[in-house]
Length: 139
Length: 158
Image (cartoon, rainbow over all chains, first blue to last red; front, side):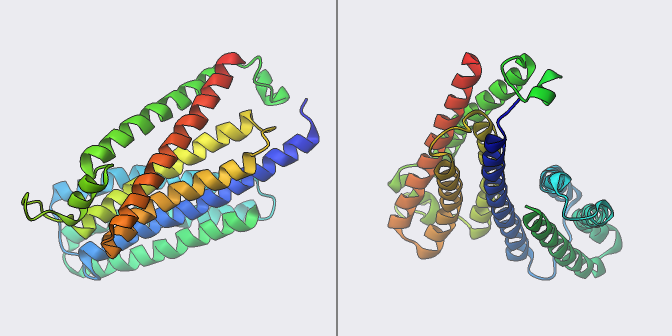
C-alpha cells in the first residue's frame, strides 16, 4: 500500500496539472471562437455541404473529447451535488451539438439561422466557461 | 485488477504496455510535428519569416491571418493533450522527483507561450519574436521527448 504523504503530494501535482490544462482549454476555445468571428463576422454566410461536414467532423470529436476530459475531473469532486453536475453537463453537450449543427440549420432554414448560429455560439461559450469555472472551483 | 487495489505498477504488465505505447506514440508525434512545422512554416528564421510575411523577390504571398489562427488553434488543441497526458504519466512514475513542480510549470508555460508567440510575431511583424517562437517550439518538443523517453525507460525497467 502507498504512503499517505506521497498520495497527498501526488494529488497536489495532479491539481496543478489540471489547472494548467483548464487554462490551455480556455486558450484553445478562445482561438476557435476568434477564428469564427474573423472568418464570418456576426453574420455567417451559407456554406456548401462539403464545407459544413469538413467543419463539423473534427469539431464534434474534439469538442466531445474536451468536454469529457474537463467534466470527468468533477467525478472526483465532493463539492457539488451529482444532480447539479449532470444538469450542467447535459446543457453543455446539448448546446455543443446545436452550435455545431448551426451551419446545417442555415442550409435548411436560410439566412435567418445565421443569427441563431451566433446566439448558440455565445450561449455555448457561456456554458463552457461556466464548466471550466466549476471544475476550477472543485479542485 | 490487482493494480486498482495496490496502485503498484510492478505487477501490472498490461498497464505498462498501455503507458509505454502511449509514450512511444507521443514521441513519434513530437518528431513528426517538428518536421511538419518545419515544412509548413519553417524552423529557421529566414524560412519562417518568408512563410509569415511573404517575399516579393520569390513571389511568396504573406500568410492569411485566418490560416495562421487555424494553425495556432490546432496546435493548442494537440499540445494541450500531449502535455497533459505526458505529465499525468510522469507524475505517476516520478512522484519522488525533486523538481516535479518546476517541471509541470515550465512544460506548460513554454508550450503555451510557443503557440501564443507565433500569433504575436504575426501582429508585431518582428523577426525577434519569430526567433523566440522557434526557440520555444523546439524547447517544448525537446522537453516532451525527454519526459516521454524517461517514462518509457522507467516502464521498460519496471
